[in-house]
Amino acid sequence: MRKGRCEEFAAFGWTETPPDPAAASTFERCILQPELRSSGQHQLLHGWYEALLRLRASLPRELPDACLPFEARRALFVRRQEQAWMAFNFSAQPCELVLPVSAGRWQVLLSSSDAEWGGRGRGGPSVLESSGELRVQLAPFAVLCCGRAKAP
Image 1 (spheres, one colour):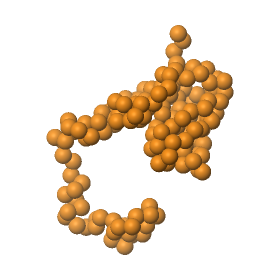
Image 2 (cartoon, rainbow, N blue to C red):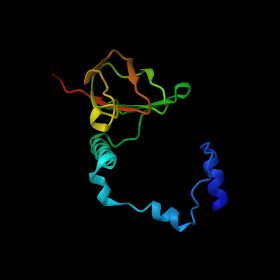
Image 3 (cartoon, rainbow, N blue to C red):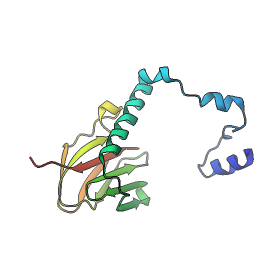
């Protein structure tokens, strides 16, 4: 098991030895501490996961109908049944993407760049207009989730 774990984590480019899966200390570090969810960064992360779960429950249950990688930029675009889309930046650098988003108005549903999630602020409108393509700016390690905007 140890050998397999080392081989698995080698793909991540780790320079340190991965945690020993058979060590009691590894198990103890993985035990959830519910009292932490109401303080500091733990509270922020707990709220983020709650928001993600609420968002997931509100989206169409079908699988994504489009998944477009931007490998050179370490980014990903995912669309769900023309009702919602998500853009992910997995890079430490900000990136600009031109996305194949259906024409119309799109409401920002969740953005990890917003100050409430510890970001520096997204700095854009809450409703985006697409003509069939949409240019978006993503902060480092950010996700932007949008859904069809309701008629004004």
